[in-house]
Length: 410
Image 1: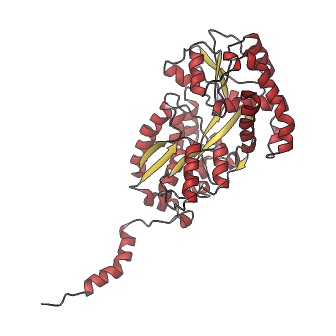
Image 2: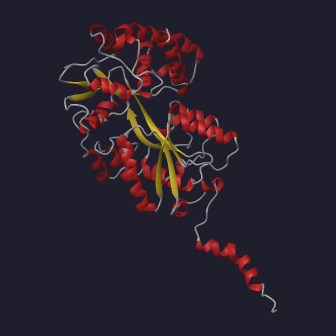
Image 3: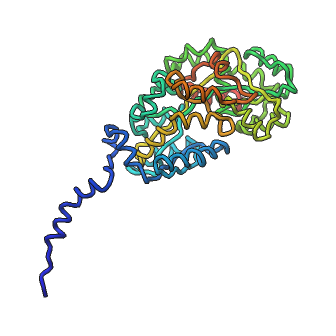
């Protein structure tokens, strides 16, 4: 029996790593990915799948992700974008459990995140980074001073900007000609029209934002809270909020014995005429519902002169994301001019851009200015005139817990 020649197989084994180096894009591990040129990251991500975990409660947002964003990622980068609906608190717990179990490779590539969820994730070391400064579109189009903090917590490059939001109230001009202009006027209106006003029960995001507005207004403004959590200051100021909310409670819908479970329920009450006002942390929300025929065309939005809270929402990458390169490519696309413009259009979504308009070309700036936001939506300048920053996350958590103790269970 002839002896088998082992020389060629041995040479192939020796040469295989070198051959693969030229045949396939090099896969940079997470610890070196942040030093890898972005073009190389794009090559590495080509042909992969990115699982984006995000809030799934808005049909128009889901549609934008599943159609426009997914199609563009496939066309531009040959990446399959998979949207996974999950509330932020749930995926934070999922990551905490994976961290505790020592799972170095999870199932989430990108998160839609901000506020206390980002703070909790960073404090538990659940995020990969800092990556945001490595994204070409962040470098080119975003004012770095606009993304230093998220609800008072340092961003430090661990999340990339995705969009902007600001709190507005909604009313029907066929029923109300002149809405209240300040928090004191709102209180007077509520007491003069018993049963016509309510707000979603915190920790619903919109309901929680409403009580933060009142907190700012009745305690002397937001500036005193911007330095970070101060338990003595909170103990001194919070009773003013509880007093205001308890004073209006008997005059609310259902006499304050129950509250809408979420903002969608409040929208339903408003559309049926049971509530005189609705509210949203999404300036084009009313216009979206007009387009969906859920609101009449007579609905408009307004803000209070006391201030209107705004924030930036972000994307972040988990510490154990299986496809960090693909996540970075998706995060970079989402802050591109084309993606930001597409989601700015009310028929698509209406989400406000996180770009610095002064960094855009004249042509691109004109594209944004040409967008018709609809008759219900306030102009960016009107919103900017009363914009105030979000409170540090520790206050948010204390306010939500305190509301349950001092208002709901009182």
